[in-house]
Length: 325
Image (tube, rainbow, N blue to C red; front, side):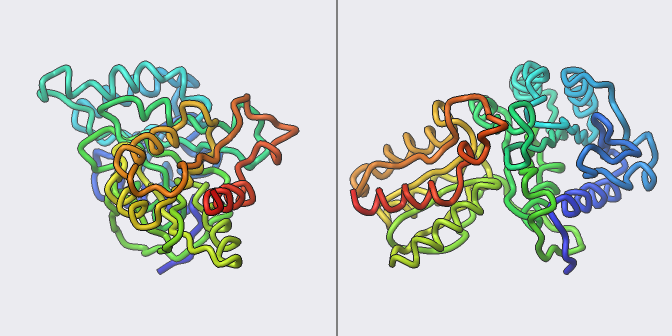
């Protein structure tokens, strides 16, 4: 295995996919020879040419319109949206075209070869236009898959699965961890199942659920809880659409308690969907109300990012409150 950070793992996955099929194309704003704002596509233009990895105009709706057309013709289109915050001009193309393409044609046509890569989340002092977590907007849309990796190993295996999946996939990358998260990653091709949660650590007293960069906060909170004799089962949801209800419900039936944490604001976030569903599935097993530890219902603040940020201390306080309810 090789030591890679999350960015290198993503680049490696793109490289493998483009070697595997000459129908794989990667494109976005500055993603050509420059390698993208975070350098995720570095070296791909030099290796595969400008026809396979290239720059687009600064028009997100156009990027996704082009990507839908390319995927509908049987190619594997990997479209990068430079920041998750910039994805909203392309919202119509994603939710009304990408997600509904197969349905509206009665399965005659599809854009299953489409993968949308975008960095999301805070922690880099990016202010309110470079720090949002917009996953819940898209989780309301049948026809899409949504994947959010937590580390380099997961990122590579999940991205390779996403690229060759038969459905359009929104692949959201935690930019706070791009260079901070480093781990051993196989250099050869491998895939990880989409739609399957990952039990990061087993426990008996309470379930702590997170996804993407927030899994790190859940693990740190679980370490603090362990010092007080509280055994936390930490689960990485991995995929938000579809999401692994069975694994989460089985854990909650065992522990009787659930804390869900997300970077996105509280109101109408995906944590709310998890809480409602698990309450339906596990009501008679619950020893305390399901807790949500989320961002604030305010634009992401630059000067107060530390106060806004959903850190391990906030998750730990929710664990203690649930245990003493």
